[in-house]
Image (cartoon, rainbow, N blue to C red; front, side):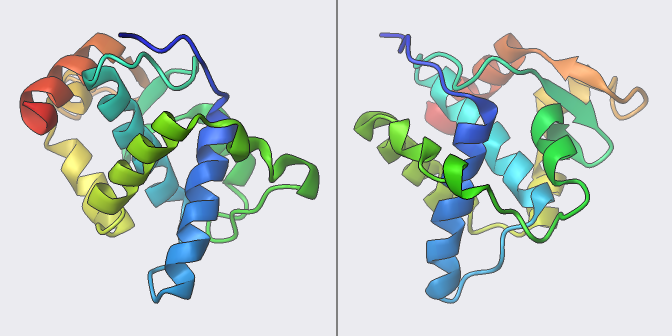
Length: 158
């Protein structure tokens, strides 16, 4: 059953930023922009593979360091190790349903253990990024959500 609820890319980014702050308190690494963008990609792939629909409408682009959501990259590009939201935006992630929050938590528990560079390298070995970049030869191409869904279903869900 496909979820009809959509979030903004910033709502999902905010969820990962807030969740990472809890992990930092427990001794985890500080979240960087590179890692945030990859966690968002793995969350999207997971939701698509479970037929939950897209988390947000913005496309993922295949860049030299893996998949990115341009608006999130743009927002934090000048502060890639200081990912903060305005006070007025901090509660946005609370709009995420309980069920979706649990799936995001599973993504965080699974992929949040990787370093930013580890996630970057992981995406470079996966079919969606490889196809979008023509094996690393062409950058800034949209990564097909169908490709992401199919890959995640075959490699992470089944």
